[in-house]
Amino acid sequence: MQLGETIILDGKATAAAVRADVRAATQRLIEGGGRPPGLAVVLVGDDPASQVYVRSKDRDATEAGFQARTIRLAADTPQGELLALIDELGEDAGVHGILVQLPLPAGFDATEVIERIPAHKDVDGLTSASVAALVMGRPGHRPCTPSGCLELLDRAGIGIEGRHMVIVGRSALVGKPLVQLALERNATVTICHSRTRNLADHCRRADVLVAAVGVPHLIQGDWIQPGAVVLDVGINRGEDGKLIGDVDFEAARGVAGWITPVPGGIGPMTRAMLLVNTLAAAAQAAGRSLEELGFQD
Ligand code: NDP
Image (cartoon, rainbow, N blue to C red):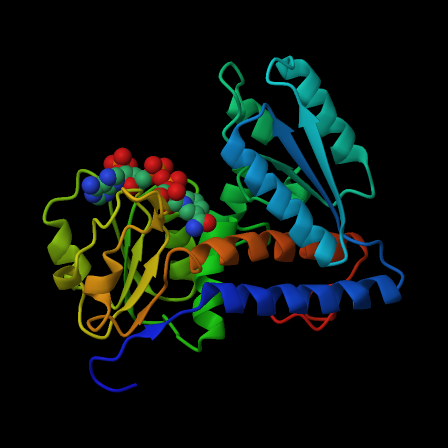
């Protein structure tokens, strides 16, 4: 890398490589007598964005050689019926991963619904059992967005041990689990949020800066330490309707050493990690590990 040159971390291409590895490992699992990984996606209601997400998850899974099922329920389905469906999928030996697409329509108790998913099938890593496993460093499914961030760094050969990671955003979906995953890798972690004072100063001290906020272009070019790694998790609609991140990409270019674009950065990695989690669940059900199947996690 030359001074002033920013390397674009291509999440789209890296996610395609992850998917290809998942597909190959799936074949080995099946050849070894294992069942194909089964992913059940539950969509309640007809939120247009959720419909798009669910379709892509189903397509990704099918292309990887999984048995994918999308179960669509009406927005006025009683909570008890949704819970009974999850129980049924929990018992089904052909289903290794259960994902309930969020947000659920108004009136549902999302916490109760998510908690009903058995931990070994919780491929989104959102149940309290999965969170406890993460915090305690025990095996379990890790949430897809933070693990996608680390997978992207791994495959780009960027280590974080001993480096200072600053995460902006403390949601249960992204920021908080990323703290644990980064600590496991021996990074030094700072987490910022809406009440953080002097946010720009914290960002400037980051070797690895992760923006998971949901505010378009919050992170400006002069908030970035020259040569830093910048991961932009944010997905926002710009005034022209196009997708933009939490980082002012054009301003960051030329300052950052590495940066993820939006779209084409962390989004595709998140989708790919759902496949990895589901493959891991299917492998475990067959008494195999990802390593044995040739998948380097
Ligand atoms: P949440 O709304 O749950 O959390 C946002 C976080 O950002 C909160 O911790 C909030 O602080 C903090 N925050 C808000 N405004 C500011 C500010 N001005 N300065 C500093 N911190 C601020 O969002 P999510 O974590 O679910 O998502 C974040 C973004 O990532 C969104 O754009 C979302 O679309 C995107 N996303 C992308 C994914 C992908 O696959 N690429 C997957 C998941 C999310 P506080 O806690 O104090 O309120």
